[in-house]
Length: 151
Image (cartoon, rainbow, N blue to C red; front, side, top):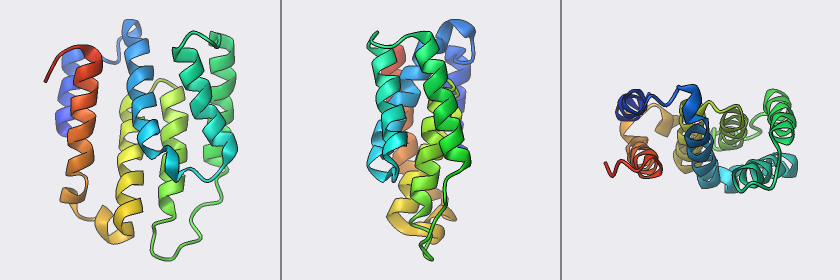
């Protein structure tokens, strides 16, 4: 969806096993941008758990347990009760958290971008590619900075 981000990820070999920390850091950065859109405190605790892992205050086993919890919460989200689609921001943000914890940074970024756009303009905004551009630019800059590339 974000072709510039996809190119940078390929350049960095982001999918490489050795880049797990970078994937987790980038996913965490993306979910921090949409944390205010989360509706469930349990999902917010999952975000905090990822932060704790990155800070060295949680173990790999704890990370796995938190990731499993986040996936379950995402898959059982009640969905939007809003007819204009803005409520879908919470669903997308919840999936962003789950993907970030799985180390699927690009998927987390995609869900986070959808969350931002849904929150700003609902269904209509999602249909307009330019609605995503500010978030795409932020994501590209953030991954580049985290990787020390300075793009």
